[in-house]
Image 1 (cartoon, rainbow, N blue to C red):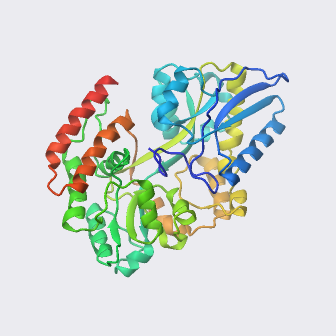
Image 2: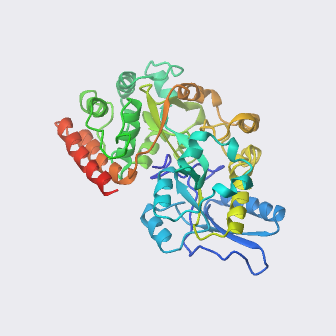
Image 3: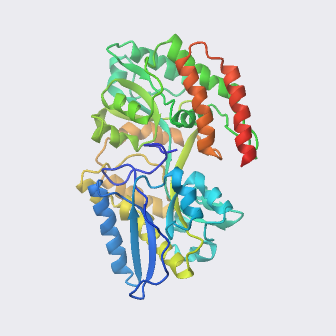
Length: 449
């Protein structure tokens, strides 16, 4: 899933949190009419995201000046990857030479034989060894590398410091357990005037996505280690649902309106009527720029529970039809565009600050070693958000297990959506039966592959 929307498209440097994909036919010939190596790429920001679009075009132009033998043709649309058309584009030969993927799609693209093996070309990618190994491993299948990570996110607890203070809670000591979340939510809801203590998604697969994150936080899992059986009908699964049920029906701290999706919850938080919800750091600029929030009031804590958190992200893979020259050109483009610490489309923090883009949000670190040190140094020098509000998140993440989304994530989330929505809309919902039924359905999904 996305951290800022239905699935993840990482917050670009300022205005638009979701970058974009193409609508047109995509694979290109190796040589353009001028004799250059031509590559098509996707996830160019749409024209409606004027600042991001300008940055992207500037960076492509700079790359072409530095590499006069390469012609980059970028495609845009919304979103970066549409799950409804992704497989059809792959199967129909309509995918770009260098194409955007979510972490959860990497294995699938390899399994259906649509990704080029990048292993022999990794020496062309200067940054590869500086990228976090756990992110590199997502695109590594049977010892071969099929993709390059570009961004990552991990989920935490966004909370409103102003409401915490009004409710007599210490905003510098956010809840660390789900019992503490429940207690804080009850106090915040008691403020009245339509204030909600804690909100959660329960529609459009987003409820299943958050159930998964909450299950990870309790130390549970959605599927077994071998990916063959559901593991939601467990004490951890029941604990997640019981907590939601009790906050909703016993404490009345989740408000009366349910079947919420991300935009609903962001609107509540931005308007100052919500105490807490689960999200990634890239929600914060949206809350400020689009929903009326204030950076000083918005803080981020690690996932309650202390066991684990859901991580996601994206990267690029290369079309199996790409020639060796196109593969090399594509890797050079990725290096320049996204993988140069403190520079490029996602890392030019000075440019972002100059254009009123948020700098200093606690995104999970892409790099290691000297590359990470440089990236963090440049980010700190250009920070324009209250970084102290995110320190708890950074500190707490050090002890959490980072867990990626399950296989067949969207199908599984659809099943779990029904479970979460039932608990939040029916006071007498049978949690045991809901989990038993969901387990059987997920087993069926996993059996079909």
